[in-house]
Length: 202
Image 1 (cartoon, rainbow, N blue to C red):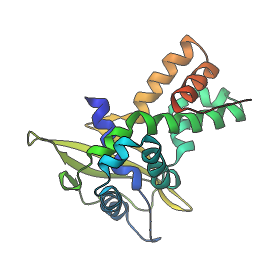
Image 2 (image 1 turned 180 degrees about the horizontal axis):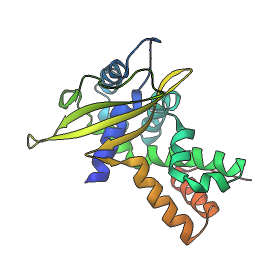
Image 3 (image 1 turned 90 degrees about the vertical axis):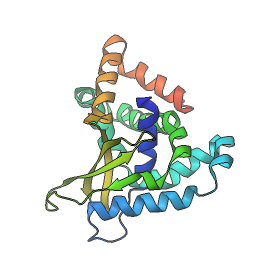
């Protein structure tokens, strides 16, 4: 259930973007949720039947707005430092594409009305920001969801989601570290590429 819910949350933040240089992180998230709801309106059945179109839609919205390299670097941690340039590039792409495919179904369950973005209370002069929100579940209870962003020249980019204090980046870091210790970074990259349908000849 947590994995399914995580997929739902990743789909909500998939449209994080900045339309103006002075947009606050809260404005970024709130506007993103509205945009995503607009893009998905009436297309759930169509996209459920056409996985490639679903992945293409996610890529169209998420790819320019998600700091894939930074997220991958955090996930690999010490293994990033020992990886060569090609391994870093392959892991970054494979990890992102595997995430998209693993959690794509969450997109189909998105409901804008159950998400409430809270006022921003951080320091905008710092390079990172956290936007807090709540998601109301069907039983009436509310779940805390935090979006972590990093400021780049192009604007604020998403790199992490924290659900009830559980960070998806840190969860994957523990998972990747354990798998790399059992096998190797190369083996992990190949598994992720297989999961993501990436063909690699080198």
